[in-house]
Image (cartoon, rainbow over all chains, first blue to last red; front, side):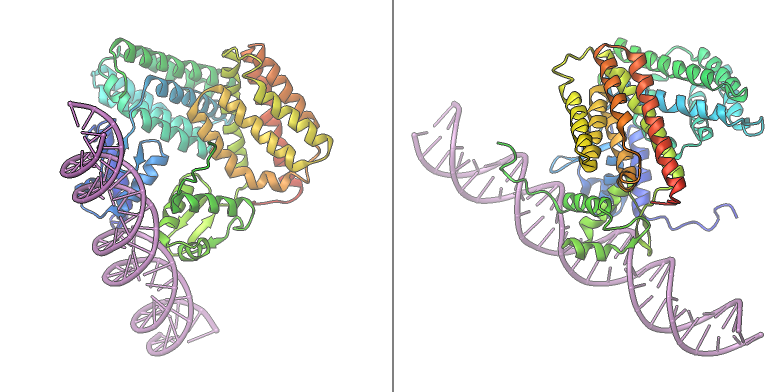
Length: 225
Length: 225
DNA sequence: GCATTGAATAACGCATACGCAAATAAATGC
DNA sequence: GCATTTATTTGCGTATGCGTTATTCAATGC
């Protein structure tokens, strides 16, 4: 009994999923406007569930509803990126610190270790998409190990907001070889229960990622993604 | 021209405001359920705007919509409180650090100073409500000075979630005399541009507040507020 | 007496409709 | 020809209604 009894899944939920997908794959480009009625037709439902979905995605920071102008997919500027990475830095660092305080054993850290291995493998065969996906899992799992549900939710939201930017810069950035080194060190600090070190290593890691990303936006003249 | 041209203000916006007010003043108690139609009648509008408001408040963490069970006002447990204060600690500490890095002059720090003065005055005349309100303004202004809009939004949400708990414990907690001392020290560190100190002082301040609150919940057997 | 099933009820999800206000186009005056 | 007013359109806010489905309660069987 996995999920064989296919949940009906409300139209509003479908709208949320599909709109998210359309946004992330660039089908609805950053900065573009879309009438509620357009989206409704596109998703094959009435305006009501689309509106409800848009309301939710608006409070997630993915879009903005402007009367008469339509639903606007929010672009992300360098300034936004800075804000988001600062939030991620603080909250994930806290998560790392808390995870270290919890004396997790190898079994409980296996998933985190697995994401690191996956990144190694992906890098070795030059599969950037797989690397990005595993990197995402690392951060998600790290935050989960921190044990704070609100931090999980917030980090998820912030990650969504920079998802497009990360996808775009993925192929113009230098190969993230140093990155895995950081990940390993964070994991080691956690497994050794060294809170302070887990925090500072991860904090530095995130700030470095921010610098790389901002540098890319600068040199490639990427104003708003 | 303050706000003389009274904006029409949509029913959805009114619903958000009024529901928030009802929740904060305990008119809709934590843990209580309410049908959409009840709320609609109570607010003198149809279900549609109430539903939209509920959707938004749900993503703010104030309530939960459960099909057929009605809208449930979310109670806050000690564990929730811990989570929330940890988020507040990290993000406000970051804001304090950033504020210190910005070399604000006395004019720009006047509002923050004002909230501290207000707290002093309120305490002197034993007006706890005024103190709490000024304390709130202090934290809001501190975060504003930090300059990160997303942190402002998140801190606002988290503060809303503990608003009821703070109101309840306000009168059973020891007089917050030490609190103002912390505030003054944070302000001083900021005005002197001492980032590290601004951060640690504020961080410690918030953690202390968390401890006090959790202690009160413990001794007064306040399970879920 | 307890469990199980079936019918009744009620609440929600969503489609639909409509009035209003904002944006755009047309028309008039200068 | 430009500005200002008027007409028209169009999209949104919100009310309303209905079909669906969870929940409740009664009835039946064991």
